[in-house]
Image 1 (cartoon, one colour):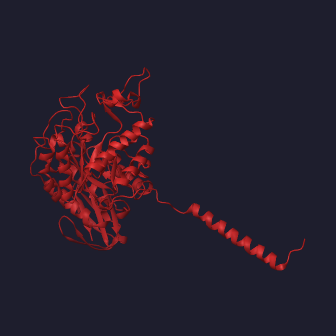
Image 2: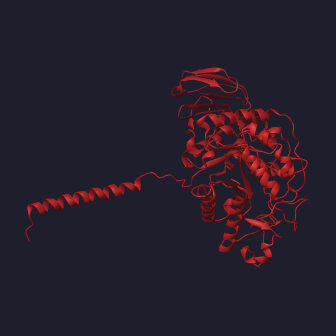
Image 3: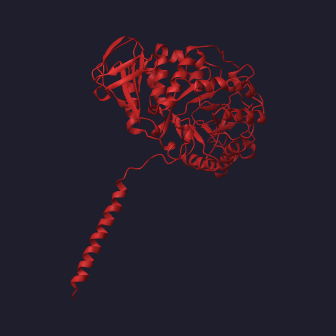
Length: 459
């Protein structure tokens, strides 16, 4: 069969266009994709966070008594108020005189020690009226032994080989029993309970206890259902990327705490810190927030206190937590110089007093709020290493976003140091943030630094 020249040309052109179309569609497979699919609340882009231990915060240990501290926290630069669990504590197999806040007896109730639901609603409204946000600590992994769910729905719990209730496997958490998330009815109950506090009390999200012990698909769905009510902020007590794809805005940076501890009282130098920053830049999704801290309720109650854990390097670590990629946390009493471990199962009131840490946090958080280089996730600047001739003692790096720039130079050692920076790419005029001194970088700049001294150059 003979084909006309016109038909042959048409077939050739059609084939060519088809190949180009296939080539173009194939190219899409190689386009980079954003890992984080959730939408962060707009207000979280340069936020800070504060953990409230309601039980120990005041003599009364109530929501009403805590309200009096809100103006001080607002002035310090706090944006997110994280309340440790507010629910009634279990009494069966209770530890100590008051029990653990993380042994939940009623997910829809309020611990009468703290007040009632009206008191809690007033606290939430007060926090919002001051331009701050509030998240609740949520314990989805386990309940108290005497939570009514244990009798009404025993099939919602995991069991020992003998068929008995059990604490979370491999842990000695004897005051709680472990849920089984293979049960769809449990998943719906827990999701509905979380929606209740968002819908009826207008809270802004959750900090989720041992979030990694619970299947990721549960959290993905829970976040989607919560966002249908209002945009929420979710913090996972875990350090894993998979939780941050669809469910959690922020995870813990446990590894940074370990590296800072090793670099200070551990005497292991800054190698671990450098490794952390390298991994953060290369492996962590850009828009997945990380929470940085020198203290939280777990570290404080079980592993010493901020002074014993970081020694003379504590202030350097506090500054470091604010200038690296992440959202800085303050735990109850840190700003007052808390120098002991608070009891976890008994009353142990925080002593409130004037302390230089309050001013340091205020200064740091003011910079965090106004300098875009320090903002969270993709809103902030990339950490770029500035090499120097004392790489075993001094960490120096730069972060830039739009017209804002921050250059931290930190002597993470107990020895004075004379350090020369290879700052040829950072040439220009800066201001040292804490002293207001003018500094010009020319490319081979030398700094004399005391033990644990830090400089923050800004423009």
